[in-house]
Length: 74
Image 1 (cartoon, rainbow, N blue to C red):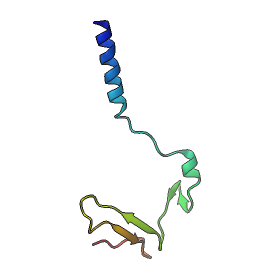
Image 2 (image 1 turned 30 degrees about the vertical axis):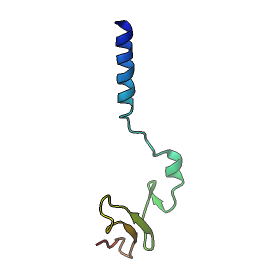
Image 3 (image 1 turned 90 degrees about the horizontal axis):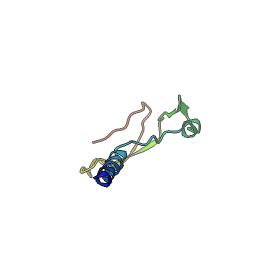
């Protein structure tokens, strides 16, 4: 019975461990960002964004940022 409880505890901890969200942001990544304010990149005119909309191929495309900081999508 002890072996069964140990196996159940191990299986449960591994299953719950898969639910953890890793932190992809690092201090090094924030420090090396160019054109950033407070560690975040600011989009400017001429930047291009690749937008992928799942299940909507007609919306997925590469869009350019205009002078007002906006993109035009259908």
